[in-house]
Image (cartoon, rainbow, N blue to C red):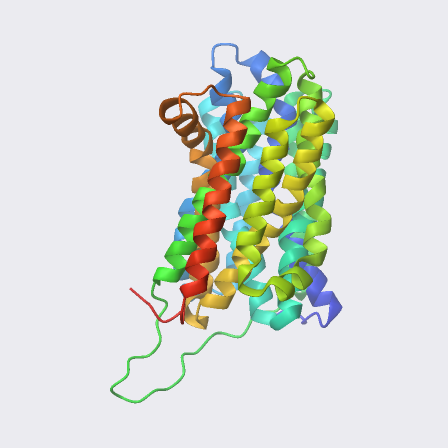
Length: 397
């Protein structure tokens, strides 16, 4: 058993885990070289190497609650990081697209453990305002730092050869070693003893957890709809080249950082309506992108959208923490990953169906308006739901 880190050291150690949350982007710098090396493969297939880990994480996220019941969280986290690094480094030695796709799926399985685990451990060790502050700091600010590390580090390594970009996935050793030495196993939850006629509390799925998962799918789909269509707008309208696209999209990541720092205060001010308000702000950022004829205006819209995105994901983790019982907590955290991964996977397709097939528009700028409208509708419906909600963690199914 490791010697337990205490106070701020434990806090820093748990936050380190969140550095892996957006590690899928580490493959982005390798794409140009891979497109050149595999000319017979469609570019769209190679592009999925960036988003595939998020979708693969869904399968582990579904099982996360049960895994936490059967195994210690320290051992489970250790396993998740190991398979994350194995899947991450493997493409450095591979010259087969199917094999690389399989390796990227393995990364996703690791992410399906490490992403919810970082928030689950925060809920295990802290409560109240401190818990909300750490969820914002970990899931947004630390994840943003991790995204920069993986994308920038991968870019530097890819200069000589695209294979070398994948060596950036050795970085989790920085997290793994101190975790082995000092991260304690959180106390195991034991259901309270009740009267004989009343069954012990179990980790059943509740309607509230399910509804949050559906919302997470829809919200993530709108965000990916924008991210997949902004390049069409920028290049198609002559506002910039591929390098410009990378610069503009990086604003989304950078803008999340300050949002994570104020999340705890933000949630305490707006109380149960903190998520719907975040959805409205995101919709405003998308609408600014839609109406802006210039690159600078689109960049402003990305900054607004990025800031609100810094409130969305920790907000959903905090919402799950508020509504779930202790027995449901690990499962609820896993379902946030499920919602995010499914939403990212269906996002471009969802946007195309609404924009092209339903509204009769074209992909590109019209897609930004579709996403903004859908996000605003989600915010309205969710605010109405919260107004009439009562006892959200008692509707187990």
